[in-house]
Image 1 (cartoon, one colour):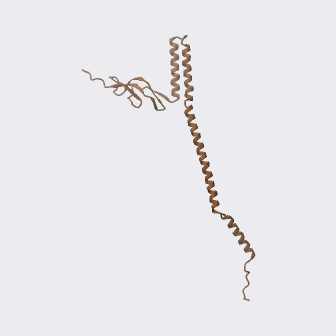
Image 2 (tube, one colour; image 1 turned 180 degrees about the horizontal axis):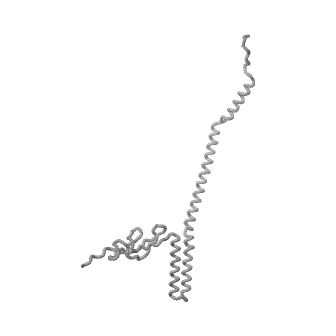
Length: 185
């Protein structure tokens, strides 16, 4: 025997520890990479189906909202115009018993009501008399020589124009001032 102490070959406790460690590593490592990839693919497919369904629901909702907006866009305007119609009907019914001044006052009140209704909905009157001619908002019917007005300005409005929130609905029909003919002085 030698003078060194004997070392045991391996202790049983160390073997058990190594086996437990190996089992833990096996549990942490994927059992089968194909199963893991299939689970990930299934999860992605599920996400895709949900996203596609949500997109379809949003598309249907937007289509329905646009259709309702188109169908009922004039609802508030129609309700306001009905008040003007009622006023006109009352004026016609009162026509048999009323004098001319009363009828004229009723017509003026109805016109004010209609004008206020149009303004509430963004419809503005274009009455460009005296303003420079603008082909985007005015339609020249004729030109007339004028010594009083600057050439190229609106001399007379034949029919008023209208715009809706700045967008032309109907151009104003106008007579445009032209250079006066030279005088023979």
